[in-house]
Image (cartoon, rainbow, N blue to C red):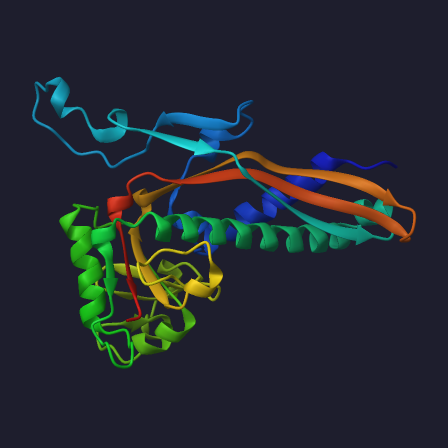
Length: 288
């Protein structure tokens, strides 16, 4: 029968698109340049960033032209991640829809997790130093309404759009949210169809996401290259315009027959990159 990499790549992409239509992840909370970057025969993409547009009085002058053409974003395709696994009968796996769905579902989840991790690290490390705050509670490091107001003010001061704001919290600070009267948790919203799965609630204009694998930061609020220095739990707030993401290769698939293991090694992989485009549209708050 032979191996058809296009089938595996297309099936993984189909499942990913289906999930992101209904589930809110970090990767679909930022600006996606994939329609412009996919298939590009280059190591990076350089082009105008997709910023917010505003109305101006007419006739307009050059200085009135919106930020869409005032700045460029460069996305290096330096992330190459794959999901390798062994299949005993590759022909059976391709012809059996349930098996094909099962394998590509696993690959889809793993690659989405990889995207989320890369993007959240990019956002955290590019928060301007003035927007890296400490929790108001310097005794118990409890997340409070005052902290979220601090994050909101930082985005307001930067004139970040009110639409498309996200607050990503770590597991420890998630529990603090339920003690804040203004936090509307998902279970309190009558019509959850208006809210994507993955959003745990809303507060002060932010859609709140829980990221269980949130990295810790050092005393300055960035992820230090020495892991032992990263001891502070952190939460990050940002606008959809704060970061850009793009895939050069949406999904590829390769196989290798394994002589010592009965089966075929399949690797479903993606080539992508992420880049902070408007870092002043982000803010973080960390333990003391």
